Length: 74
Image 1: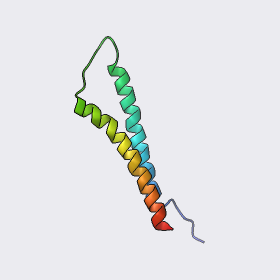
Image 2: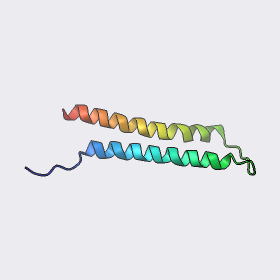
Image 3: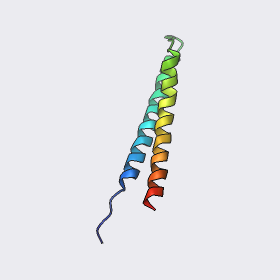
Image 4: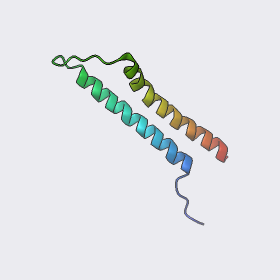
């Protein structure tokens, strides 16, 4: 039998989830740096919404790619 590699939908799903988790980590780091009492800073509400929604959307997209890829391959 030929050796099987990782399926393409699994690679895509894991990439989306990893990028989403990385953005979430950077967001948390950035927000803790902005919260310092010596340098108070205000972030626009639209930018803050994007910082929250983008990682969640990437993780959700990764989960959907995995589920639909798994269903399609059955």
